[in-house]
Length: 322
Image (cartoon, rainbow, N blue to C red; front, side, top):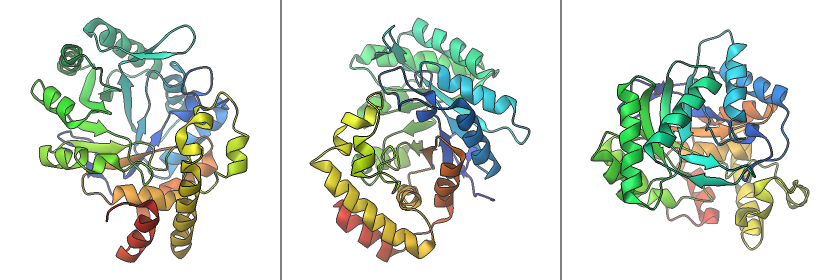
């Protein structure tokens, strides 16, 4: 499948509309795990995405406490086609119990970068991102200055941020240019469309959005019964999006996505992703998959072109001001 690419912010990276997200394949055993995961299936899912033309993989040190990065490296070692870009993140550390905490101190980021390079088995990280900001402004500045330093040293090619608001991005921009922002964005969580996405457009900052299907909620495969059977070590089980009073509204949205998808012969999830890609500020969407068959459904989103009527139908039920 030949996918059109878009330039990511100020970088020389031209990325496909969808990228492979590696959060879920980190597996269980930490605070935001998705339950047990079969590593062979993860590798097969990555390979399938690359076969379909996806040219970037997004991961993070914290996913599966290093395990996700190792699986990405394993998938790339056995991949014979064109090498995809590899994006990862820092700034989220973990304790012996798998509880996560944020730290943007210079020495910590430096060590994280070395660890990620080692786990990913790469000479340089294509895009290195601060995973979450911290409340301490001085520490945010220290963290971003360190990122810029790593870029100068050639350990990372481009630097970005994730989950930053406009104020935090302005702080970072004063130190070194931001290549990209990675925000949460979906029909369930469109909050960044108010101020954050317009700011990125204005500043020429690329945007790669995560959870465009609201962590599986909008795939069409998620039912009440399935949610009730999610293992206790899947973070979604107790999240408000997956529980009442929000759940009924979210499942009603899925049915609307299903009816729009039928017109194109595509899944509700593909329509949900296609909706995020319509925003002019969005360069690409990060889509996770845990097995190869899930990949085909979501990669199809890149070729879904929603009409005005489709948008009206979807947005009335999502209560988004069109």
